[in-house]
Length: 149
Image 1: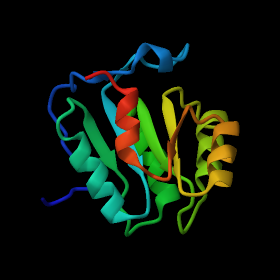
Image 2: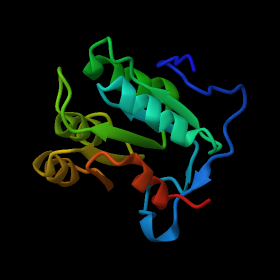
Image 3: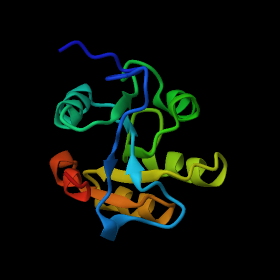
């Protein structure tokens, strides 16, 4: 499968989306996830996550691992308005906690952020800065448990 990191599964009309399970909904956040932004420096992880999301009616956008991630995140959030960002904790040019903090405090991002890290410390710091969910040990399949099927 050829992967277009700028916009995977883009459709002319908005995706139908998938609902979060009621116990994970938060006030002021979307009830339906229509667009997901994947932020990770590992192309294999991105490919795996993309394949796992194929059966969901969502638009998936991912960063290009060959470019600086920090610069891409704000551009992609502004362009695609994701309802959910799955954020790696540590990337070559930026830490996930820095991006979470900037997205929440400076960028006014009101969607969900899932902290996705092998490091417990990175995960805790991301949660303290405003991430909504944890994906323990980068096991993306566990995140799918937050969604209604």
